[in-house]
Amino acid sequence: METLGKDWVTSGLIDFEYKKYLLLGYLQKVKEKFDRYALYPELSDLVFHFRNLEEIKNQKQLLQSSFPKHISKADFEQLKLVYQQIVQDDHLMEEINTIIDFALPQFKQNLDYGATIYDYLEKEIEISEIGVAPLYKDAGYLFIEEPFKPEYEVYQYQVSLLQQQDERYRGVHMRFIGHFRKSLSSHLENIKLDLIKSKKELPNPATFLVLSKRIIPHQETLIPIAKRLLVRFLSKT
Image (cartoon, rainbow, N blue to C red):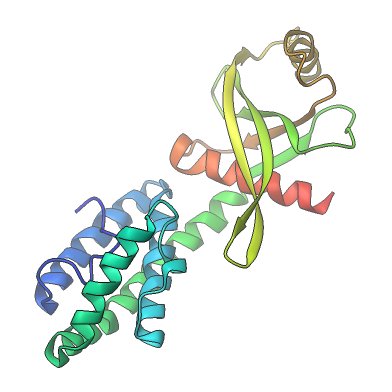
């Protein structure tokens, strides 16, 4: 099973052996991806499922805050209605509790495994600033350099402040600009100057280099880690 539905515990057949089969099949696929150092979106999905089950176990109710933001209010109300009907059935509730008690340590084990890989790979990636640092750094360019690749991959980034429930956090939107060959004549500073000349909307951009010391999956791991490193760097400065 490639994915696990947001309401996998309460949808379809509510039977421990069946849900165990679904869960273990899903987690096997997740581990296979983690073994290849492909972390996302699976690592985020594990966090969501783990927190959601904890809330159901502790609160005995579905909390809208635990569901992805693309779920509409009407969808959530329907899920909540189904869950309330289940709560009133002692047999089904007992089966769900059994499923949750089995699933939580399974999610935790795989979360820890994914987090260990993330921590290891993050140490293999460095971020540094290119050229003179402007005062405003929430928009600019991100260069990505990988071993054995003859080109830099360049993105334009924009950092925004996002509000989710009672907490605020910084999100990063990245737009691919292009590839620039590595050579003596195309030094990072020169590429930055060329970008400034060709893209007038950023006359004094913050510019960063993300250097990966090893080849790792690009979209599934390198880009998400690069975003987190950028946010952390900006938070410190």
